[in-house]
Amino acid sequence: MEVNKLFLAQRLYSTMHNIVLRKENGRKNSYVKIDPVPWAIEAFFRDNIVNSAATYHEVLMKKRKLFFDLDGPPNSFGQKEVNELIQACVNRIPGIDPDGSAVLVLWSTEPEVKASCHVVFSTTLIPCGDIAQDLMTYISDAAAFRHIDMKVYTNNHCLRVPLSKKRGTNRQFSCELSGDFLSRVLVTCSRTCLYFAQLHSNSKTKKPVPFEALHKDILLWSRYITERVDTGLSFRRVKDGRFMEFDRNQGGYCRVCSRFHERENPYFDLKSLKFYCRRGTKEKGVTIELRF
Image (cartoon, rainbow, N blue to C red; front, top):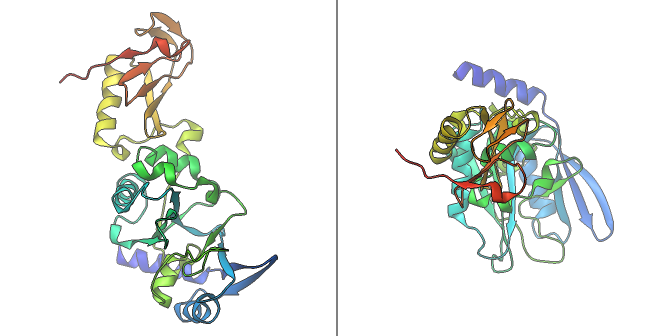
C-alpha cells in the first residue's frame, strides 16, 4: 500500500499545475500564478495577501480537492453539523481518504454577521465537472447539507483563499501562515493528494446507491419498503435530507393505491413516515409503521 501511495504521489507531483489566483482590486481583476510548493505559497501569502486591501480568489481548475463552502445566517450551523458532514463523507463516498484527521475546517471571522466555513479534504481529489448531484446522492440527509454552496462545483467559479478579506468587510477565513498548511488547504494544490473520490453521478444515471453507503436507519427503511410495499423498487437517493426516492424497475400492481403503475417513481417521507406512489396527489400516501 505504501508503494502505491508513493507512486501516486510522484505521479501527481509530476503533473502538477500552478495555483492560479484572481486578484480583485476595485474594478480591476488580474491573475497570478504560484508554484505549488510550500515555500513559494507561504512567501506569496506573506508578501501579497496578508493585510492587503485586495481580495484573492483561487481559480478552481479541473484537478481539485473534495471541498465544501458552507454559508448561512448566524448560529444556523456549527462544528457539530460540520463534523456530521465530514463523517458522512468518510463513511459513504467511495475512494476518499478514510482518515478524518486529514480534513481541514476554516471558519470565517465575525460569526455574528454570518456563519461560514470551508471544509477541505486535503488528501482527496474529485473528478472534474459538476459533482453537485453526486454529492446530493450520498450526503443530502446531513444537517449541514442545505448550507453547502453547490454553484462552486460548476465551471468558471472561484473560492476566496484563506487570510484574504472579503471585499468591503474584515471577514476572512483564519488559518496559520504556514506554507505546509496552506498547501493542504488550497483546493487546487494537488501535491498533498493520495486518494481519488469515485463519484459516478448515481442520481443522473439512476443507478442505486450501494447499501453500504447509507445510514443505518435509511438502510432499514429501504429494505422494509422494497420487501413489504413493492418488490419492484430500488433505492435511488435521499433528497433534501427528507425524501427517500426510489426507481420502479418494472410496471406492476400497487398495493398503496390499488392501481397498475407503469414507470412512476415513488418516494418515502422520512418526516411523516408516509409512502407516496406518485399516482395523482399526495393524498395517495399511506402511513407505514415499522415493526420488527
